[in-house]
Length: 340
Ligand SMILES: [Zn+2]
Image (cartoon, rainbow, N blue to C red; front, side, top):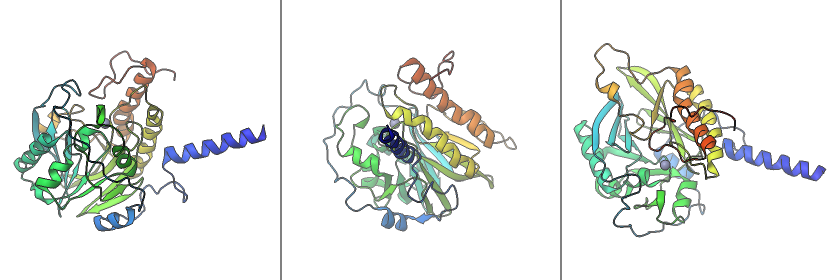
């Protein structure tokens, strides 16, 4: 009996450490750790022997037309969201581009080379130089986020560092080309994103938070932005929604609250999503001079409105046993959150 209790207790500790991303040193700091430059991050966080070798799986051709709706998706008009933050992409998925004053950071890369090419053109329309991309951040190991990496590295920004989680990378070396894992994968990763790390590019320090659930290696981000010089903090959940049949779904709930802790410490007052279906930023486009920024919702609503969308969706999936009403993050009306 004693042994069973001990075993159960040990298991709980292991689970808690895994869910929280805590290390032997304890919970990672919520805002005091030093940021790493790209070179430091690449040097320090390469894990010798831990990364699976790149597997060059053939590109499935043609792309299954039923997957993720109908292709190709039309572009949405590229938009400047803040002084230093831009969004480019299609009606399905997009990328945030951060102007750091010393090069660009691109968060996610689109579905495939067509998306990446379109995003590249859209950046130019916004007055950005895509060849100045220094860092390609991949939020998670699904094709609509990594699908453009090969194109970008080859044609647009060959010197950009590629960063994703080690879990995501290793996963992509083994999972077959099916479902969410089609399209060319990154051929190499320079920086493995780990929980709590901060990367500094130019004048911008980006914090990474491990939020497994939407996928095992899903990462979320906290990025400082300014609006006409006024400082704000944007939080971006790296994955949208869950699938009732997947074990990771249970992790998602904990990850939302875990991200909340980091977001609160950083005073996030802007909540953004990685899919353009979550917002086409219409309200930003029609904003008149002198009006408040429509994306600045405040620190309280970051929790009660922005993160709540993700909680409601999780609850809907658990309650209904159905896949999330994908795309989008709004749970259908009447899907009252209830017991688990
Ligand atoms: Zn995904």
